[in-house]
Amino acid sequence: MLVTRQKILRRFWYPTVPSGQLTDAPFPFRLLGTDIVLFRDGTGIASALIDRCCHRTARLSQGWLDAGNIVCPYHGWTYAGDGKCVRIPQRPNGNPGKNIGVEAFHCSERYGVVWVALEEPLAPIPDWPEESAPGYRRIDQFYEAWSCAGLRLMENSFDNAHIHFVHRNTFGDIDNPDPAEPTIEQLPFGFVARSDVAVLNNEQQKKNLRDDSAFTVRHMTAHWYMPFLRRLHIRYPSGLDHIIITAATPIDDGQSQIVQFCFRNDSEAEAPAAGIIAFDRRVTAEDRAVLEGTDFDVPLAIHSGVERHMPSDQPGLLMRRMLLDLFAAHGEVEQTRHTMRQP
Ligand code: FES
Ligand SMILES: [Fe+2]
Image 1 (tube, rainbow, N blue to C red):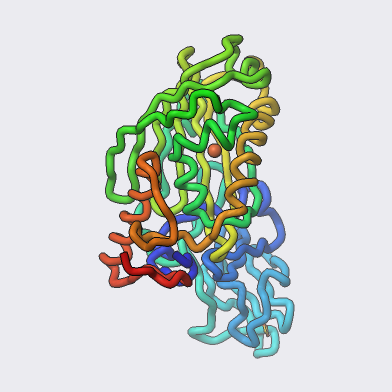
Image 2: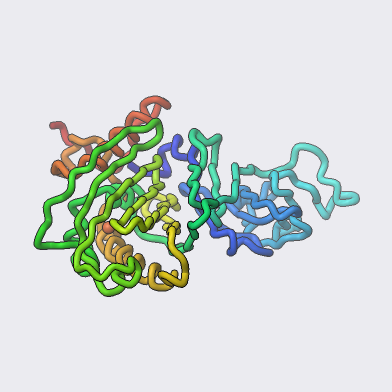
């Protein structure tokens, strides 16, 4: 699947820029191969426009903000957050006339990040009650580009077989590599997978979990939100919740912007955020090292012959089938550079 060629993927929300990084300057971002520019309008509301002036195609992100409007660096044409041109300095009184403007995209700010959908979204941004629930805190963890497909990270997150190999130096138990089998409940735009996985407790985790045992059990409820968003709720035997939200926002076919934060029902005094980030940093770096070596053109067709499978691949295979069904429902077929082999 080449994500930039699957038009229906434009109809989902993707987290793009952390709220704190969207201040008083335009912020460029590439989403599904489309260059966009984000900025705050006069009232502080985040806006997203095509990063291309309708005069001579200059990049608006190279311009500047003026009272919440974005000024093109080439001749100063000025646009509001809804894309309308509000000033053409070379015309009398700067009056732009009617019907001049650039494309504006759906834009919304939640969970400390600015979300964008390039076309009418098929599903809402998920509601995660922990954002405002008493006793929970949000810890912002990572914001970085990885050279891999979003689907690779999604299926990795639901792949109980990789834990004991990729994470053998953090929490995997390579001597007990049997993958726990999840139960899967399919939803309209995703699914929930539940499984219990026995893992090792390293020194950092003993502090983070306030549990000195050598082993612990992760009760995992993992939610896949089509196409590249995941919520992993890990409940430990003590009742501690570690809920990781990970997005692999598609930059283009070969790159994904990783946005990760977590919710915890403990306090900074009990487990400092720095220690929690340090452990999750090590774990994600282990995943990243492997995933950046994989082919970004993930074959969706199970019998393509490009990849072989095993029983624990079930969640990833379901993702592929659901994406193919989504494409079919909207008159699309998988776009890929693989030559399909006949079974
Ligand atoms: S290219 Fe933007 S004002 Fe001319
Ligand atoms: Fe992993």
